[in-house]
Image 1 (cartoon, rainbow, N blue to C red):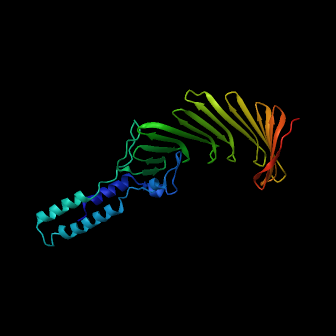
Image 2 (cartoon, rainbow, N blue to C red; image 1 turned 30 degrees about the horizontal axis):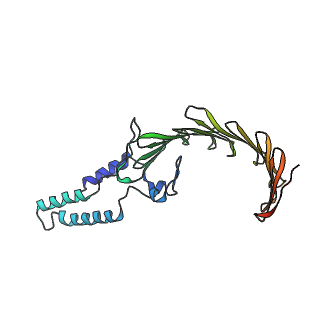
Length: 290
């Protein structure tokens, strides 16, 4: 006779068709929107530790031998053994549940995951991550709860119907970071703001037709830093210039990747020239004023 636990297992499979262990889903150690987490954590799954599984298996074997009415032992002994086996069996792993107030804590100190066409849920003891997909099954919104409160939310916008991210918005309690990309995946701009939406810093980049960066402008408070890049015909960087509030303050010039010079300016005048050979700074430097 099939035990009722098998019916419970069948019902679980029908209700949660894509329940996965974190070991299967997160074998790489990467959680989208969260980043790399300790490998020991991602390898955790809904399975019991090996020693517990061994004990449960041993108990189940004893139940089969004792619980069969055709073997020795009275009916009451059979029922008692069956009850003992029920007690020894582990409880079904808690399923990921969402409520209006957000995900609820998951017991056992494990990491659980659930994947569906609409998104994925990854849950731990004190933190949860819910990633919702758009109609094309691309990540649209990723929300992290910590101790029952939303601690971080990331959203993605795409170029048309492609998988190419156009804008990524990362928001937490202190503010937000908005990153824009071109169709080649280059970062066009990174803008940070406070919780009230006031812009704090910004970086805006320009690129050539070959995809090499040609200019970068960084703003923070009243300081504006501009960096320009010059390449040879083989797209090798040969010169990099740095300006602060429109005034040149440093120039790098490369002969090759291991040999270059660094020229420092102050108020428009050269104050130091450092030479690097085979990647090492030489003791001799030239300092002169113009």
